[in-house]
Length: 175
Image (cartoon, rainbow, N blue to C red; front, side, top):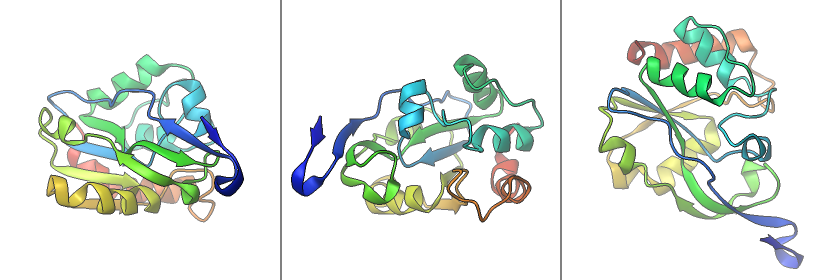
């Protein structure tokens, strides 16, 4: 549903896909919510310019899955004990602009924590970190570490620098 006028070009978005996790995941990576490209691709980090899959593959020492291979992406995460979801279950947003997020209903992240022995929560970028702190941290009782965003909009961080920082945070928890 699109809103016009005062909420110029806002759209109500409902998270379209399930979290990735199993009972062996030791770390949970949370984004804010799927971008328009991810919603179209029907899986996380579907914008080929987003560096998430390159960063994670480098950290775990595996080849980067093909852009359209959802099964390979899911398997890569689970093989290494990485759960993946987003903070936001639904919200109003303009396009893919995290800065425009309004009227948040958070995902039920406790659902993942009830099954997986998560030892760390890592947020992909400042927006995910702010949303987590506002909507989930007190409820879950788990602090999160905020990592630099893998988004192409985060041009200040090179791929090499991202990999190094993510390796520091993610490395101790992956198998």
